[in-house]
Figure 1 (cartoon, rainbow, N blue to C red):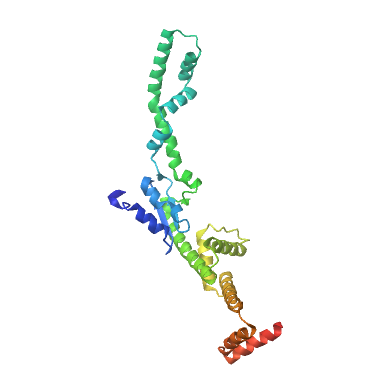
Figure 2 (cartoon, rainbow, N blue to C red; figure 1 turned 30 degrees about the vertical axis):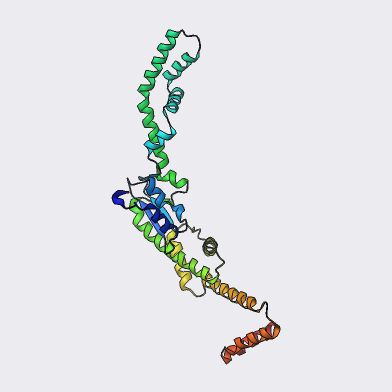
Length: 285
């Protein structure tokens, strides 16, 4: 929220949720922290198909800071229970209190010793709890919960983000072409199709879909090569869509009206194309 950069969080969330122009890559640098409202504004679940979140191993991210998490999740009563579990002296004092063989005076003294021991251990256990909470905010832990796309060291981030951006731009371009050729195909289905074609071409090499550089090169080849899997799929989709439209138009038409429609279509073609179409029809009879 520094300098009101993320002051209008709701407006940013609305804009990101509808953003379709390209990928949104977010990187948390070393010693950087993404907390509270800033985390909510930039969370990748806002637009999973576009937003990706990366972080350096020495960064931190989470809605609450470790201190706040400890105050909510681990109160003094819980700390007391931990002390009784792990501190030998506290175990003995607690066992003495629970024995039931003490006088009123002995109970008072034992309780006082328990309180003094608890106070002496409080700071150490509190700091330990903060360290434990901090482990949950480390990028490795956040990535394991799928709230972070990948952990990327600062020394590698420029090269990684450059290739990642190129790959995502090409991927979006391919997906858009597939969806234009067949509006019924969802984005996930289009990406799954591209991934299947990629594995077919790289079955022997063992290259994975997560590797940006080889995927980027393959996607560029798919766009440039007219005989690629992608362009053949697009041509097939266009053919199927055209056929669907023709069948839909002729569905409720009379036979003579259908004949007139096809005659008009033939008349709009050149003589050479008319001959080719008629020859194909005659062969398929």
